[in-house]
Amino acid sequence: MRALALTAFGGPEHLELVDLPAPEPAPDEVLIRVRTVGANRMDVDVMLHRGIGGRVSLPQILGLDPAGEVERVGAEVRDLAPGDRVVVKPSIACGTCRFCLSGDDDACAHLVNIGVDRPGGFAELITVPRSNVARLPDGLDFVGGTALAHAAPVALLMLRERARLRPGEVVLVSGAGGSIGSAAVQVARLLGARVIALAGSPATVEWARSLDVEAVIDYASEPAFSGHVRELAGPDGVAIYVESVGNPAVWQEALRALGRRARAVACGSHAAPSVPLDLNWLYRNRISLIGSSGSSLASFADAFELVGRGAVRPNVHAVLPLERAADAYRLLLERQNRGKVVLQVS
Image (tube, rainbow, N blue to C red; front, side):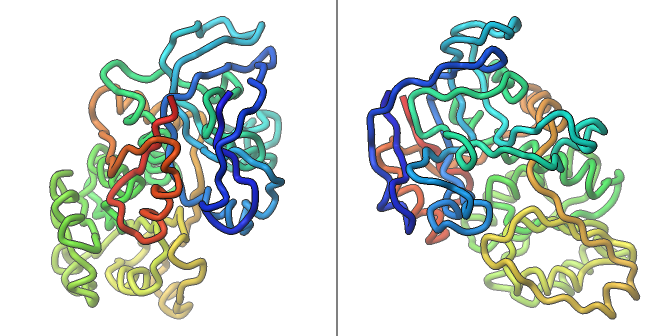
């Protein structure tokens, strides 16, 4: 099979097209012919050999969120057949640790990440456990499936389970033009929240307005936006702040808009891993800081049920052929994208 492999650490210039033997599915696995896969910032961590990417051995096939068609199934798989259109959940839980047994498999003590700990979707074929495969809803193409495979379940877990959003609360979402940010806006609205979105350019502001938010603030032109947000939120302030980027200046200003007993939930730190925090403010206002990463099997299934109803839609910036993966990562690294950059594999 044809694959795009990372052959050296440093950057997308080290991605090379190679021919590899086709993988064989284990009894509980599915062999998928990949049609699309996303360019993700976790791939950049692998390229730079940092974070969870620091445990990768080369060569490695990246790509955490493939969508495609079932090619073949293992002997124990009974409910999928060749030709079925499917999408893949990026992280594989062990199913036996205390977190998995309690339904909190997003916090599995032995998580295996596709594209990091095992080959990813930058290849014509990939094998994954049946538990990590969902059918694509009718009407959703492979591009949309890839765009939502990571974003929609992450947003749902973050707001429903981790932050425990209640109807009527005010939610402030940063990075609203990104794939996770735009999914968080839509999920928050579905759960009954009032949503204020933050975006960093006029084009992104226009996109966010199309999501039926109460207001959109361009933090690039209005960096001291906390007062404006408080005026919009009302006397109780913002109840939940969703942080998916890690911009220290946006983080600091957004926290000033939070009300007492608010929750700040973070699922990303690609702009910067460290942000300022005033501990006096934290405990005097009884603020909760919550980390959220990935999705559970339940949030993955529930998110695609929402997608199937048309309640959550993908945000796609561009679709490029696999051979242009380096261009896709330049879009990410230069922050030119608004939404997901998707690669067409076959």
